[in-house]
Length: 232
Image 1 (cartoon, rainbow, N blue to C red):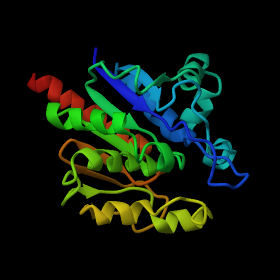
Image 2: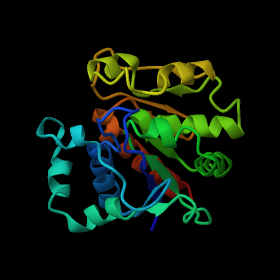
Image 3: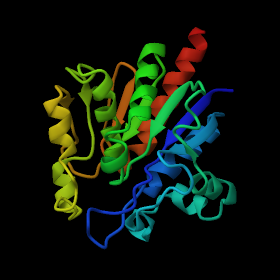
Image 4: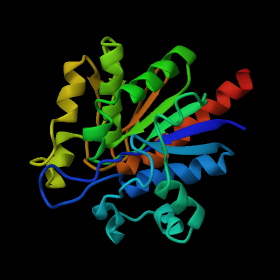
């Protein structure tokens, strides 16, 4: 059975405002059920471990996918998200693939995390595929601290400044993820229409632009591991 590590943010505060953030729920659920259906053994982790905060906005009915609705009645899935392993606890485990969910909290605790940077670097060395969605792509900034040239020329996507402004959160985020990725040499691509599915694939990395891209990114990761299994 293939082992997959899902990583969620532990950060709940949106700057110094009263608004809360965290993981974007559908980018956990849409990927989680795709991985379970594909037969993966899934481990869910976060920087601090324990309960990963859920962005309250992502729980509203306007953003609820079918998988979110399934999650609401799935005690085991709720336990996975409510009792995550810490990144330090999974440090010595070898995984066949890695998935990082969306959520504004990632801009704070996944963008400068040495343990996460090491995990991504190990994926590069082992050729293990990695999928990231939305703000979760901030994890690449942690990788760049260990391997500065990792993003140079890499085709990548992530939550855009336009989407940030349309969601009315651009004033609260600590930095522009798009600008940071471009500054490190990434070739940034995005959908013409905001909030529509879009992914980029380059080397071991699969990046999804926004929550709508989570299922597509997860399926691309499943397909990649299936091809590798056949080659083995």
